[in-house]
Amino acid sequence: MAKEKTLEDLFYDTLKDIYFAERQILRALPKMARAAQSTELKAGFEKHREETEGHVERLQQVFEIIGKRAQGKTCEAIQGIIAEGEEIMEEFKGTSAVDAGLISAAQAVEHYEIARYGTLRTWAQTLGFKDAVMLLDQTLQEEGKTDQLLTKLATTAANQKARAA
Image 1: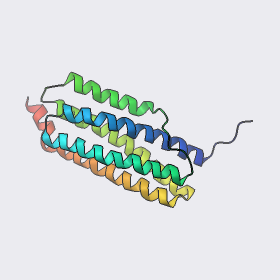
Image 2: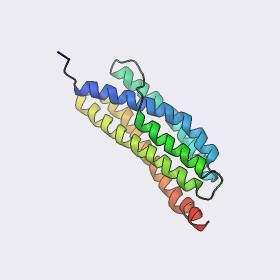
Image 3: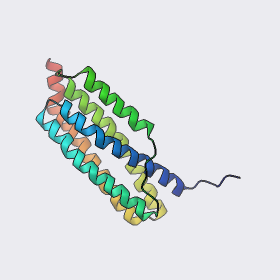
């Protein structure tokens, strides 16, 4: 008979998922920065890459807290979201709409991460992983700020520029 799966198993599985996702995002962000036309958006992608390196480091600490090896698990969701972003970069390259499209793709990534980190933080609370709660919450707050910044860039410049063309 198969062993009963627990919330701790689910926590570990989801942790591997977001670890894989963050590492994929690290590879995608430089491409997005190169594709962006706005200097503000380029700088935002570059800053978020630095933050994402910190997210990976925090995740490694969470793995240590739970006594597990840091490893990723293929995340088809993030692969699909990144593929959509690459499609936008290709189809809208050099157009006035590219930044609006890049922001849209980046926000899809952020919303995925926010969902994952919010869930992991709640499960860590339930499981009594106090140190992990703090680390996951720190990343969750950063992801939320990035999402707000992207919204600001979209509404103050990128969407207007794309519409005017």
